[in-house]
Length: 130
Image (cartoon, rainbow, N blue to C red; front, side, top):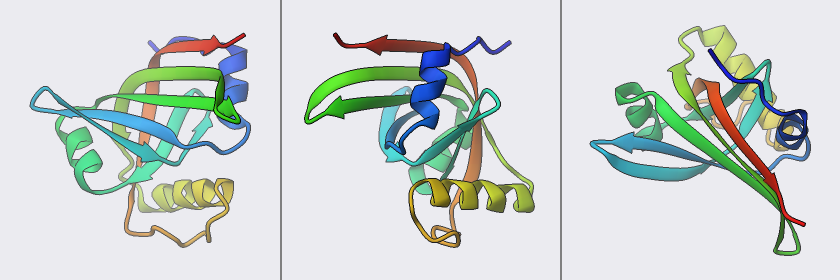
């Protein structure tokens, strides 16, 4: 059962658009790559292709790391770990793509070749820097 994400972490995830770093694994070797994401209803949604998507299909255990800085000084960071599922419904996948593109200021149809993925969050670490 997914954990409850602290309210501060939810606010961080749903505030300004930031790049997350998605960690996947293939044959016990990590692969980390930047991604755009959206958080809603206890899950992270993103769209991806290539190596990240291949890795998710082979091993759905993933992590997403996000951090915010103020002129290079870290303000907060979080890591979400969970299980990724490829969104098979085309209409749902297109809606996720549109929502993410709007969040990051891209045209709604950009990156249409990407596949939607949903991460059910299992655990969260959230920290602030004083």
